[in-house]
Length: 414
Ligand SMILES: C[S@@+](CC[C@H](N)C(=O)[O-])C[C@H]1O[C@@H](n2cnc3c(N)ncnc32)[C@H](O)[C@@H]1O
Image (cartoon, rainbow, N blue to C red; front, side, top):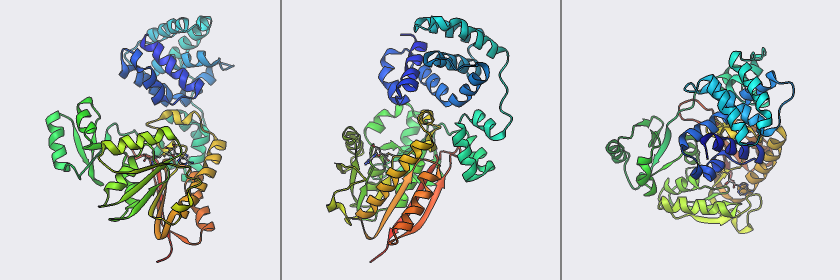
């Protein structure tokens, strides 16, 4: 299969069947010649989706059907962002691809729109919020919500921050010191630098050379926000921690390593995702008690049984859109409102499971207050036996931080 055909098929899975880009990519990866090219192209189109929609809307009076829109987005993306491909080749490749995928009838239309696009780009919106939506390629309703919450300057700042390309390597310091890991990275010729805020993490570019160290559990890939969230939960030596929504298991595993003898129970509602927690824990040489559970309805014997409860709830994921641009495709205000109801229920259930004097940590990887501060405010109003010990909204900053929210709530008593 040609690489362009693979890009088209993967984008079709994502746009038309609602597949996650990462899963659609790995399902079809065997049939592509150049995984890097296909990955960059797929993520590139998804990342620029709002911008491409703006251009299509400005150039055609009626939006074409699904497959033709995908071809148009691929062609426009190529013209805008693939410097190594001359414009005429971007147009010709799109026409050839249209014929190969049974969209030959759209060739004339695609040819006309793409040639006009090569000659002249449609203007950007005059209104500054709408213009930022196009230039940052973030849906307008989300930009409006951010501006309302954070003001124009802050919104512009975090929406235009260029993402850090290197990832955070969390070194398992129980098994190898950071200094020894740095020596190993030097031997492998892998670039690394320390993170000023985290003693056990390094900024590293992911390369296949790291596979043996990763498989051996000497390190894991973990975002800085995830680590900071676990440190806010900070179980003490010998304490019992409960992770209500734990798959794939990154935070549960880190919680178990933050002090000696911490026992962690890690739950998830999906059976197939429990396997992810188990293999993560096995790779990192940690013992975790893994359970199938709907976090909105924990078993009664869990009530009041834990020193620390983490509610890392399912959320809109908007704070990690730089890494997963497909998160924008399926979200709207209604889906956020229904998520917020589930999030609130999970927080209330988590609160039931914590001991008197214990701590509940509520976290999301999103920037919308409906999923963050509003949930905590409502919780505190309805649960007078809890007090806030602080909350923090992190923003994508181009230096390895995502959009992430952490709130620490203490149950009074003892
Ligand atoms: C944000 S992810 C958790 C990430 C995880 N804490 C980590 O650090 O690796 C949210 C998880 O919640 C799970 N989930 C969704 N609804 C749930 C529910 N009602 N009860 C328990 N888990 C749920 C999802 O399957 C998903 O694995």
